[in-house]
Amino acid sequence: MINDALKNFHIILASGSPRRQEFFKNLDLDFEIRLKPVKEEYPSRLTHFEISNYLAQLKALPFKDELQAKDILITSDTIVWHNNKALGKPENAEEAFRILKSLSDTTHEVITSVCFTTPTFEKTLHNITKVTFKPLSDDEITYYIEKDHPFDKAGAYGIQDWIGQIGVTKIEGSYFNVMGLPVHLVYKTLNAIAEEK
Image 1: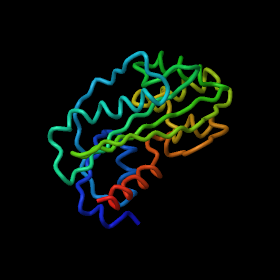
Image 2: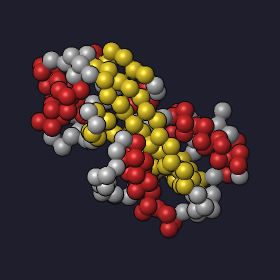
Image 3: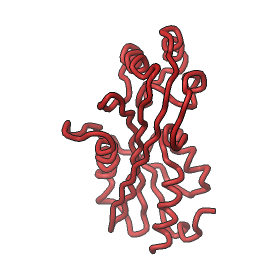
Image 4: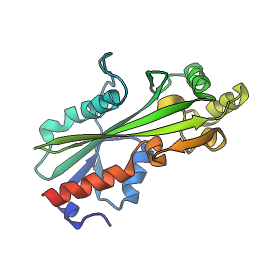
């Protein structure tokens, strides 16, 4: 159901995330995966979706000089926002434990920003989902970290993982956004780009 006009474009997904890559395959899109290393740092003055917007745009910067006329580059970033601070990816098991302990028996926000870049324009969108965890025991947290090693995930968890299955009691918004991509927004925006051209 993706717009036929998109077949005239070359879509580049700049993400090493297997989850985001799977979403693009499920949309039945022809796309290329292209990766460039970026140091994911942001100014301390930024808060909330400003952080994920900034990082999604930052990830597009290394590609800008090489984009061709029909290229659409897609970059994205996901953060967990809790107690007025951003929770990124844990560096080790101890940090993952601390993060999950802080999320236990509370509600947090998962924010994913997606940046669409062509040689002539850049558009950044974000989506917010609220996720509530039950009280998590220390044993449950430790078991999950040892089982799934969630060090590549913002907030130290994947909602599709064991911890999400046994621990998430409520979700408000897009489930797929929590997995790392607001697929409905990507679909809508790509179709809009195709119609504009």
